[in-house]
Length: 449
Image (cartoon, rainbow, N blue to C red; front, side, top):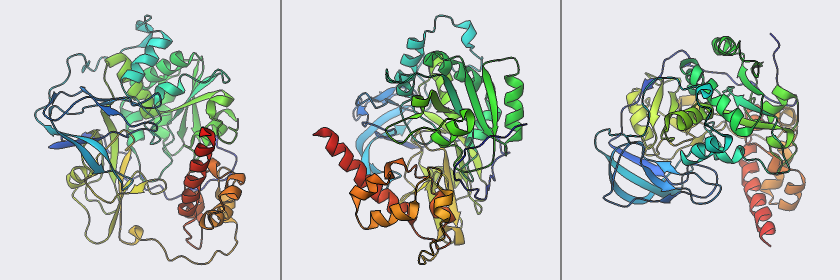
């Protein structure tokens, strides 16, 4: 079996896949569900309900707020309590819709049966119809980026898609939600891949899976043995293998240029396995995106697990169902330890991009003491984008934004490999992100002129 990987940089943190062989449980409904209007890249959604309105599971509660945006659907049935603001995973107060949960009544048009609907049985589904259903259902990138899926399927005229690449890598430590989804819903994922291929008008797809998931590789190879145009690509255990540009490099050996270039500029449309599953449900089952697979994990968590969670469920409820927070110091992350964000409140709800709630406890919850840079160059060796992280961090702290832009800070994918590998425990990525944000604002202001 040939193992593929990307050609530049990367690290291999301890995997800590504690929940890998734990079957998915259905999480209990919340008493009150909180729906942030910004669960995706782009313009926030606009509420179409008001206080006192009755909603069902699958009722539209907020419409897309622009072209780059996505609608939001209720994951619960009940009464709209209020439209307010609440702290999200970034620590800022953002607009939300809050719904008091009453029962579990679903919209009638959602197909809740387990019958597998195959694309081959639905010749009436044109590429345009598939894309429209994906758009209407509010499907966004489920790997965490949150980019509206329909936009990726409509590349600019200057780019031509040649293949779809499915991200089944899940290289971030601790997280196993994608792995459980692959093991439990392989048939639906494959039909989702076929739908994505037809929507993108390509005749080739690759599913990349890291070789620390041999059962998933074997399962998908068996399921696709008679499908000539879907290829399973085993990948080496290396982070950040799941990054779009790294995955394109590993699978089809093409390098995506610096921004504003995107994978389709070299012929690839990249989607997460969770997105492929959501596409299947949206197109074949008329089911909007309102629930997702999420891992709740940590070395000191009593009963970690994988859950099918209704969006809007507070982190506190899921953590309590796993035995609560351990005694002592804890850091709760929305996501994994490499790219996840530490939350300021456990009232933060599960959203479209919440693939994991990771609890770091004790020693792991604290940053190491920062020491002077020893010029070892490990951050340069680790950077999968070929950047010089120590230099970008220094320029950011000195607010040298013009030089920072010249040094391609916008190519940083925020993977944290530099900070992870630094023997002096310097906050390299933290500084870079501050500078990158400033540079991005400067670029946007320049474009408006």
